Structures are given as C-alpha cells and as structure tokens.
Image 1: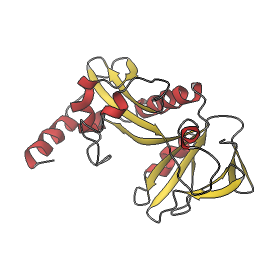
Image 2: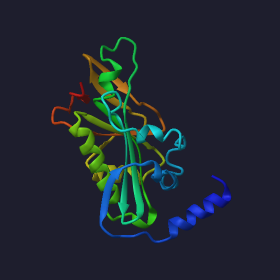
Image 3: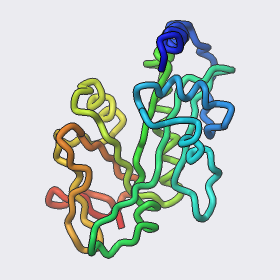
Image 4: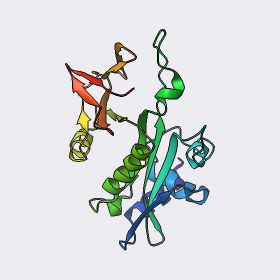
Length: 208
C-alpha cells in the first residue's frame, strides 16, 4: 500500500461508521475494495484475484471456501474468510477431499476500528462456524502470530482452545497420531464443531 493509499485508509479508519442494526451476508464482488482495506496487514496475499475463491457460490465440488461480511446500514464493518484445510502426508489413509470437508481454517477476521467492541467479530465468527457446522465440518483452526498477545484472550472468549507457541495441533487421523501446523512463530487455536471431536490423551480425535 502506497503512502497516499495508507493515508486514505487511516482517514477512513478514524471516520465514524454507522452503528445501526447489524447484518451478516456472503462476500460479494462489490465488497472487495472495502474488504481489502479492512484486511490490510492481516492477509498479505489477498488480492481481487485471490479473493475470487471466497466469492464462488458453494457447489458439490467447491463448498469449502467462504467469505462473510458484517454490514451496518450501508457500511461494511467486518469480514471473515475461511477455507477447508488440505493435509498432505505420505501414507496418511485419509484423502484430501475428506479433509477439506471436515477441517476448516479461519483465514482472517477483521473489524473496522470504529466498530470494535460491538459484537461484530463475535457475530462473524458465529455465523462462519454455523455455516460450516451445518455442512458437516468437525473442527475449525486458526493461526495466531506469537507476537499478537491480544489475540489469545479474544479467541478464548469465543470458546476456542489456544495452544502454546510452536506446539502445533496433535490430531488422530486415519488411525495415526500426527501433528500439524507446528511453527515457532505461530499458536494454533481450535474449536470443535461437533460433539464427537474431543481431546483424548492430549490428541484431538473425532475429526474423521
């Protein structure tokens, strides 16, 4: 983002937004300019081209990527992006198609600075998880940068479990105990979407 664009974004961030009734709906192509501003610095790789994945309507072959926006009257106040997680491990007897329809990754959630502490983020998270839960997904995860000390309390308040830095997520898949997402600069947060998903002996079971 150039200096002029950043100044415009900062000005809009300081400007007031409408605080009328909140509605949450699917991301639309016309929302992209506002969505990209909200996500600036959050999802570095998101562009109008890559965002197209989250605009595609759910079909039998593409039901795993979704974008939702929170809107108050005519102002977009928040956005959430999520996508099914593909896991590629040699010898793992669980096919990719099964995984992307059982394990979902919260890519990003962002709320306009002037609309924070008003339930916008919670509303987006709940709507996102309800959508995936209704389609049979069983576990949702998210990456939290270890330097973002403000994030664990937020996710904990949402009902998520937040792991230690670099610990990854231990899963029982296809008869094997594996660890995914282990990285020293990341905490993995997760929440079960189904009562059959639980922690047993420190390993999350029931995903598949």
